[in-house]
Image (cartoon, rainbow, N blue to C red; front, side, top):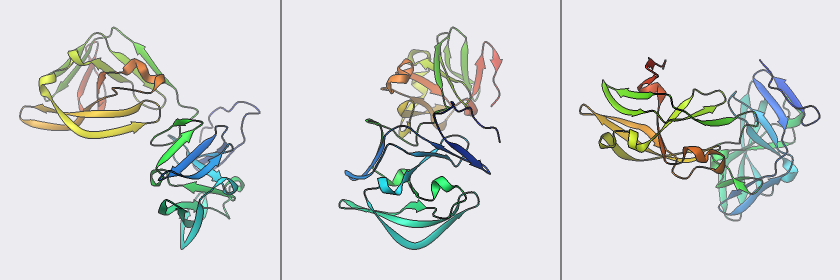
Amino acid sequence: MCRLPVAAGMSETSERGSVRVERGHKRVRTYLNGELVADTIRPLLVWENPHYPAYYIQTADVRARLVPTGETDHSPSRGTAEVLDVVTAAGTAAKAARRYTESPFEQLRDAVRLEWGAMTEWFEEDEPVYTHPRNPYTRVDILASSRHIRVELDGVTVAESRSPRILYETYLPPRYYLPITDVRQDLLRPSDTQTHCPYKGTASYWSVEVNGRTYEDLVWIYRTPLPESQKIAGLACFYNEKVDLYVDGVLQPK
């Protein structure tokens, strides 16, 4: 496993198997139905997968009651966890916490993993964060470009632009955000789907109808992105993996 660079003196890091644990420095709070569940200035960032971390919070910084369910959950790298209900005056999140009291990672033994989706709100400092914690090693660059972008679906050109904004995000393929006026709007069909990104905000979607077939949720748009991603506000983006995408006439690999 390749270790990502860490500034000297800024964090404590240990690894075992495919998991990495690092001390974070942001204030992190989470709520359940308006009641504070945890408030910490010493979160642990735990990479359970290579793309983004989970937050583990010291038991002393958890304000909610943690009630044992009698169940356990085993991880080959982190050890056996006690499964807990998270209980506040406003409600209960069933089986929403894990505590690895005998973990081979010493840092985790007095920490609690709260299930992200079971909580109502998460904050880093005073800003809400969605979907998962921000990865301190992920960078998003959005660059204006004059490259010729053409998007084809089932043999039909559905978008063509010479003024894309190209979004480069660590670990991900480039995404090409296009002015809506460069997209065949007559082929777009509104969708109720929304997704959330901790770096970009909330995206809404269109499906695309071509040659009598509807391709679901193929195009997305951030109408009011987070401040760091304002350059893509109001632009449309296609899944590279689901269309034929040409950049300066060259078909891109899927």
